Amino acid sequence: WGDPAPSPPGKKPMQPARNNEMNDFFFWAAMCIVIGSLLGGTCLFFSMKAVEFLQLTYLMVFGAALAIMDTPVLKSIKFVGMSKLYIGKHFSLITRVTGKGVVLIFMGSALFMTIWDTLESGFM
Image (cartoon, rainbow, N blue to C red; front, side):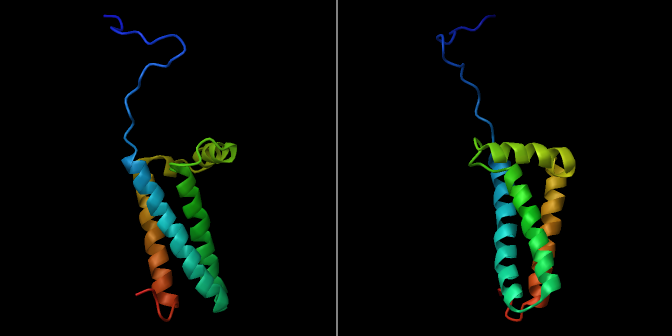
């Protein structure tokens, strides 16, 4: 029952590829929240609507935290690894698939309602 073809010395054995489609989906959903809140926040900043600007700043920061948790790039940077540990330690809800989905739905709907309610032209 041993390994039929042991790997040569110095090489790691092949491991099955992990399915990262869901992580990519969560990453791009979080980036949509970041980009939407950045665009809406810029418009609200120049319109002098401070409360709504503060709400979109909050959404942008938490969207960036969600994007860091599932980033498909820049994994070797120390800041990203330490941020993942810190976020996972203190916000354990977003380390689970269901919790992350609920948070993304909440943030997306909060972003939509803020843009719909405060911007005259909207993005529609």
